[in-house]
Length: 84
Image 1 (tube, rainbow, N blue to C red):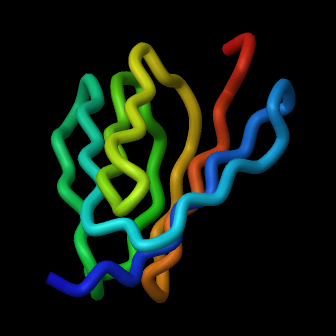
Image 2 (cartoon, rainbow, N blue to C red; image 1 turned 135 degrees about the vertical axis):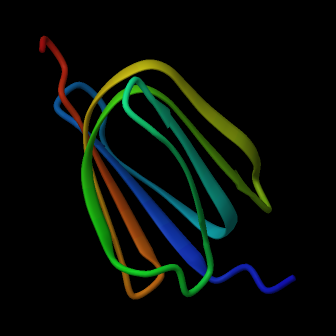
């Protein structure tokens, strides 16, 4: 399986964390479940739930997450809404 997604997690507290060679991103929110893989269609949304990023570096999981995400051209960005 090709792993060409790059994930950026942006927070006011920790700055930007970039994860390379991501194979999939799982979003479980109150309204929907979403699985993003390579060449997935562009999508933008709000999250109130959990995000799991699976890649070469292992599994990166965020529980009880509120924020906004965008995926386009195999680049995923998650802006954490700290204090929301």
